[in-house]
Image 1: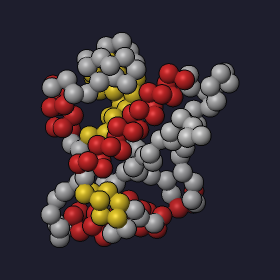
Image 2: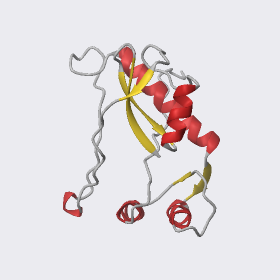
Image 3: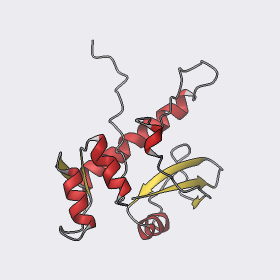
Image 4: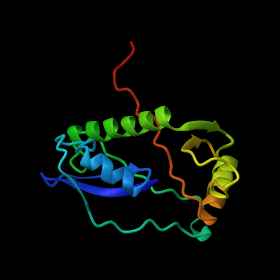
Length: 156
């Protein structure tokens, strides 16, 4: 998976994941990539720093973000929060529809695919922290799958 920093013709900036750079090119050419803020399909790549994994000295820390409370002043606006939740939902739905769920065999399957011992295919599943670290250290391309956004509608 490749993560690109993107922008639309209205200067809205966002990120998106693609299986390959060719997938990005073909989806943009077919106008399948749209801005989550204004729905423009005039999309271009932005300059983006490469992702660098941390060292073991950093321990079990993960990079996280909070959108803050609506109206709190420093958090994202309700419109931005809604757009982010929609994007997360769409990414997860795409993966669940188009990738094979290998469950808790993820680390083993990812390694076998990387080593040419299993057919090349898109997979998702679960792995322990140690398994994730081992895959990353061995240069096996993996990415976290966003959790399903919480529904804001009350059931009662």
